[in-house]
Length: 107
Image (cartoon, rainbow, N blue to C red; front, side):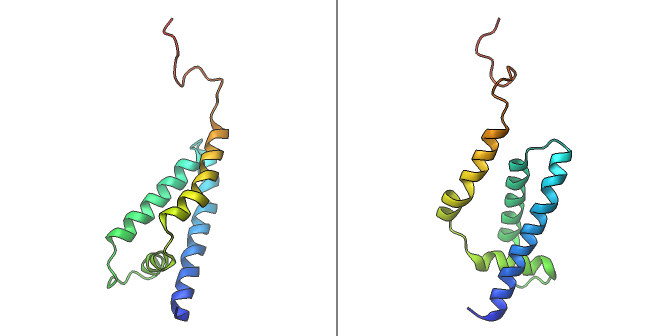
């Protein structure tokens, strides 16, 4: 792996971590679940990576997209490494005593 590819991959990870560290407090102030924000961020980056072509030159954005493609996270890694903490924190945030979620009886 060439050195430029490693630097671009590190840049992509740094940009993602920066976005997450900025978006989570923003979501908390607006009472939006953090898992929803993280999922939307992942969908957005995935859509950009699908649409972007290698010959586009958009500076930092194209470098981040190329870096994300170079990292090459497989679906199995996502399933076993990233999904369990997201589901766990979402489970902790659910108010199980709320009667508004799914009414059992219709009295």
